[in-house]
Image (tube, rainbow, N blue to C red; front, side):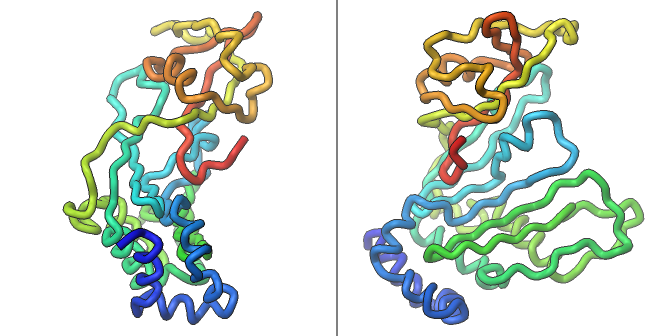
Length: 278
């Protein structure tokens, strides 16, 4: 069965049939073959964290903890060595996932009630938690995306304050799905391999390298033919994969780049499916 026929058949399952019926005529019309074919390369599931008290550049990177695409790929972050300076690039891994694996994830989301309008995920008034991130879960089925955003999810208050059923339900789903192989069965995922991006997105910030002494930063000359100018990249810029490989793969958190008289510290990530364009 090819993926278009698989997704068409999936709509007939009880879990998704109820979802489509609840969404009305517009969503039902999107279940045509053409709409489904257009969704094969789109993100089906993304779990990540946004906001909170984080180092400079972290919000720009906004890397997922789990990313699943309709064409059968799963992206997850790798472990970062507990050394300083660590690698400039957060390791990311890619593996395949079967049609049945994707179906299982969607059915899990439907069973958790996550394929519709998000409930109220507010913290109970008794819980006072500062500077925590939002957990953001986005699930797309037939062109309809359901987004669930919960502040400080899974972070207990100092006195062990109460939670809510909606927050507990979302946390349970996130915890289960984060271990994709266990959630869908190890036979439905392939072996992990290092993600080799076709391009990199980055943000450049002017720094004074003398503020780092032990260890001192390594300063690398920014290539004039890189395809991006650091002075114009303070918000966002992109580089082709081959160019980025040569600059970033062996770089560390203390690899800075010099352009003209200025030195820049970069936040860099490989471009993943669903990443916004600069």
